[in-house]
Image 1 (cartoon, rainbow, N blue to C red):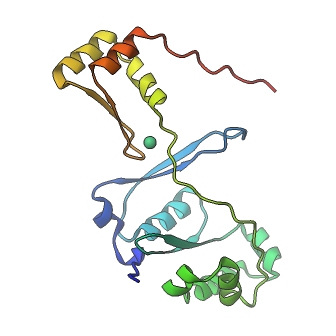
Image 2 (tube, protein in one colour):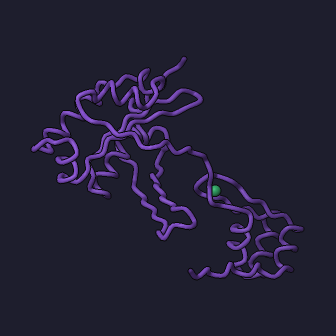
Length: 208
Ligand SMILES: [Zn+2]
């Protein structure tokens, strides 16, 4: 198995002069607004950059351990809660001391342990002297909120003459999603359909 530790590579080397975008998109039924943070990539690994982001933007000291194989990525995130919560949670008077002990223990984690141990076993092994509470796991999936209809809406913002001029110049029009890289292509037939159809009615707001 090839182990690949992202901490050994600089994020800038991976991503060139890119930016790091963090998007928090709450579930559709949640009463929260989406949030997005954009930060320039600094020296260091992806984990270093995320730690820096959380410290500077969220004011939360954090440590992040990432390891990947060609087919999976595993991570361990430590985040320091506000001192009052932390001190009461683990029954220590000195939150600084507690934080440093936990970071020191977490630093002993190996790539193999991160990749192969179930979360509960890993937590008990690393933090045996502290009470641990494991929340129910939530499954992850890869998806983007872009869609063909959102792409249609982007094009509809343009004037019809502008769209036709673009089409004449380029032969087809493409709309790229900057998050997931999906490219939506419009040839002359697609553009004709778009320009000759009424925009879909906006989804009515639901009042509770
Ligand atoms: Zn997308």
